[in-house]
Image (cartoon, helix red, strand yellow):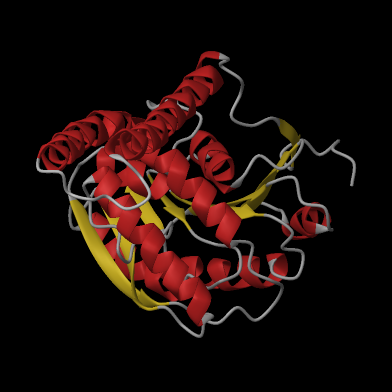
Length: 303
């Protein structure tokens, strides 16, 4: 069986189309399949639309509130019954037509098949610029090439179970899927235009995701104070030498410059430590990543 996981947040306009197109593609593959919509606490009629399309091959999970896309993907992975799991966006910007090629590479021995963007579509230039910065930061933080990575991905059952071993709350699916290793291949695709609804990613969500991922995959920011301290010592030595040779330093003398510089470094180092402490605080609380409020397998769930 193949499981197709579709995280959905305020996607009432896309549920029926996604169910129809993905079902059509899966029927042509000849594989037994299930489609699992995960309603991430939508404020529109997304859940009602999921109930309307649910049946033998299609089911849905509903969060009690908005927990975020990463939690929705994790809930889908936890619930999936398939020997392989495909994660795809509800807005169909990830083309379902690429799924058969993913399945072919999976049957050929790949444990993870990543969807790589060959063309980003007609997205706004400002978003593309921010996305490139975000992907560059992710690549540096994780040590993997995330330049054209996406959540459009197929995972073999053993890769799914490996991802589920990681219990941290701030996990980043596309990076974690690479981090667990296994035999990985890629499928290139062009991002389709969004025909219905509005995109959910903003500058704020990209920034938040970037910061959390950096904290999850690297402790480099904790060493910023150390490197900056070394630079401060060198700068202090230079200022001392300049003072010995009576070089004029304008309206500031060496002591004032050193104090200001040191103050900035202390604040930077304290900020980095504070952020990691906040991440530790979130993890030790052991709160659930999500709460299931509804499941279409329970036919008593009220619409």
